[in-house]
Length: 265
Image (cartoon, rainbow, N blue to C red):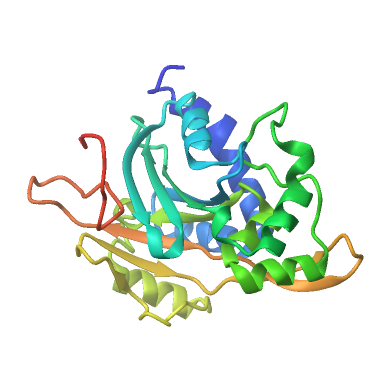
């Protein structure tokens, strides 16, 4: 695939992810249209995925599959205390958003949680038709979901939504009017959108090269295999502002403590 043919990647890979994400996080589409009204264009900086290191959903497997669409691994980080591996992938076409994959090591989970993941995924160790909107073939019961949730939030998320997009993040740098965080926050709050301020409305990265704003999560009623229903947090909409590195180019990475990475542009 020609890596510069970004329209193909957008239509074949990104658009289906966006459609599914907006069904689960309806505020995202409302905010997207609001920003379109105030700016010439809206571009997404990156898309985030949560996964578990199962044979068909591990970070290396997803990275290899995304390589078929022209993505390259540009950064990788490890969080041993949280049993996480993180992968940061870029595409050579500037209009195609980067991808952040957060992979949980399932071996850190309790035996009941590992057993639940095995039960709901056993039929789909090697799916015939691969796509990033893939959910486990069996729904958990509400009790199983609550067991996973008490053990690890990522495991609980994965049991319901699989490898669908956790969130999309708007590139504030590409907005021509709300092109700094104060202007963006002002617009969102004036329009009645609630923002997460648990770590401050504007979150600054450790390396001070990125600022982020996050909406409060949407919730929706989920039906479980036990025929019970419960309201579950389904995701947020993110906004990312990048600053220039000493070289004069926008900072393109994401992690503050990478242990290995390929050469950045």
